[in-house]
Image (cartoon, rainbow, N blue to C red):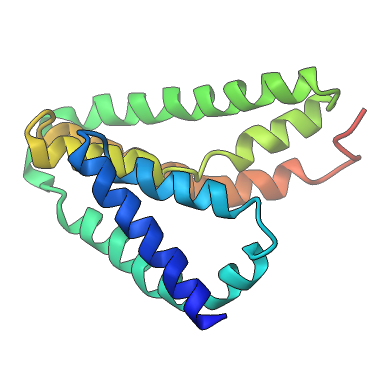
Length: 171
């Protein structure tokens, strides 16, 4: 099982590197590997064996992203960043709630799903990190992305607690 986990991690890193060579973001290759392996009988074993890697690398990733923020560059765009954060949060909630309503969840259930999507910002950080490193975006826009991810991640738990008070979310 340890060898299989090591091979799976190696395959993810290999495909991430090949994606980069092809002019795509590394996340594409890693995502494809994870998607392919998630459909196998090994998924639970891989999840258990790679948990330590996950627990080490995820905090490092978030720390590095936070350390890249230039707070001085954000002074002029702070109000825009807060407005952007509010719009993104509404967009995530509505964009997730509409399909939930179509799938026969009631309004309460759709709202729960929408609020549950608020803290999902890892891909945003990866893409903005790539944009920052290539010079496509500046420190101000990168800071706004970090701010949006941080605020939406912190506000989601209290909103979810409030949303789960009451009746079930399925019609």
